Image (tube, rainbow over all chains, first blue to last red; front, side):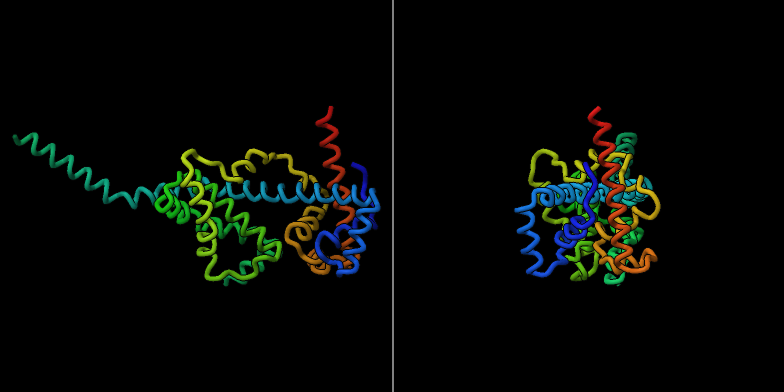
Length: 104
Length: 169
């Protein structure tokens, strides 16, 4: 990839991020058609923007992942706590069955 | 309150997003598993996906205010994804799983020198106008910030170029 021409770069940014008025936008779009260099630079620009966005997403995912360990422990604790009454009922039933079996 | 959180995220404060992630994550997983019969892993991935979509909508300016609180917003946005997953017989992989697979430790942005990463982030990710980038970074004016943006972008291109050349050999 060769370096960007700064003039093109500023125009591309302005176009891509909707900073141009209607007339400037039309002019830029016409330039994109007749100037293959500009069109090529714009394609390269878009591919770098995609890379930036993907990197940001994967950086956020890494940050989330770092928090997951502690959060998973809390989640397990919450799940066990919410199922405690169920476990108590199951243990109770087992105890009753054992008592009935032993007292027979 | 929501408005303050949203504007903090928009100005590049990712700690706020992490705080939101931690605050609702486990409630979300339990809610998703009991209401949509998805697995715990699927629920975790959907939550991450929704958080990232939330982040990107704020930065693109599409989301400036939530109807209701952030928790309601996130849960509501996840509903369609969860229904889609729960209707499929086989475990489907949300886009986040694919992103995980793509993620590598050698990130370009982290290799940028000086304050370039911040300049790139504030403009290309948080979508701040150059005037605000200049204020946040302590540059003289928007023109100075634009010059810096160009230099940083070039630096990024060189890193990408180097990696591509390295991969070709």
